[in-house]
Length: 587
Ligand code: G6P
Image (cartoon, rainbow, N blue to C red):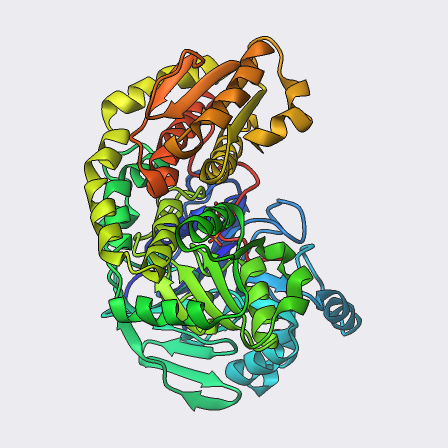
């Protein structure tokens, strides 16, 4: 969704905020803005529509003065994409500025009340009410005014506020991400760590309703009116991981990292894994919930547990999870799968589960995310920051972790470790220049298509779903996946001369999917086979190693690359496809 960043300290704020915004842009990129202020000077706000780089050219953010400021990059929810609706928003006097990520559910009634009191609104956003609410109580001082304003809000929010004449930033979080970075020269606030990773690795994670008051002299944190202390951790992430390096886009960089990230995912604390395995053995009902790619990884997981462990787990889309509420008890174990740990639908599912007394284990990439704070335990993916809106390396890490749990449950942990390690070269080769060129050729064949269909069975069905998601979200070509067996129940009607169908085949269900390919071929379909063995049925062959339970990893990588090449050929920015955001923090 939106990304926010703030800085107060001994350096000029605007260049730091601009850099922070660029690092956060994957969270939303329809408009952006910065407000800065020096304790003795006025607040100055510059904002506009477009990507940060475009706005920067027009508004010259870096020329903004002041050693304190707040910034925002937007993914519109309430109010169209206009200059006025871009953040920061100010109060009626222009002396208070705020940025907000989340949704203020009761903004309608608050707005009415404030208009009656004479406040004039300039935007259609829910967020603007926050600035006016602070203004309403400013006679009691900036800190108290913020606290009483925050008390009136319903919904989800991470907010930063500044006021002319005050040398502090006041921030709060509730169900929306906000972390604090402690650098030698000042304090950062941000929706996500990569925003300030260049200046500090010291991070303070916040709990819901934490109010942070940060000035040059230090930080105070309050929760429910009481001053509290929050530990400061050092993150293992590296700034180089959050840069594109030699790659044109983060998407290709992150795809190429998978030989390494898959190896990092298996480096888990054995004691943590054993504890989770015990919980699984004792659970009565196990769910895997996630959205988008994390759901597809969950679906792949359900096949691992069925095949390797003979254990039934329920993969459920997080947004649909409440429909299963009645099956949840204090014996149920819920795995909440989320790269960011901030997806609102997933967090909602966590709350539903916890409300029923169920245990929740997060599978996530972000330590300190809401999921790690709200879940009972976590398994971390260790993939490093993923900046591209599309999940690539984190999808394969999720698959690795689920497979690891399945193997641990049947005492094949070591064997599994060896299997994964032996795949290093295979994964590396899948991202080689030769493979990329091969897939670029395929992309040229497919670039003018309106529809691409994908088929697979069992684990390969989960891969087909994930592959279809990659293609559609980044190339805008309609891509749809079917379980091979379902073709004859409807989708065959879509196949005509030349219709492209990507088929994923594997050793364990080769014959059945071959029959499906015959069905497609008989109707003139153009088949791309993703498999270890060639077939006469293929019009184009993408050769991958046969990796058994690890097939979802080796089979998705070529399609991630294909999707990337399609996006580039069609002139789409693969890191920021239209209408999407990496962390969707609204339900
Ligand atoms: C968004 C992203 C997807 C991602 C999904 C779940 O829709 O665009 O790429 O798979 O959120 O994200 P999560 O962080 O919960 O895994």
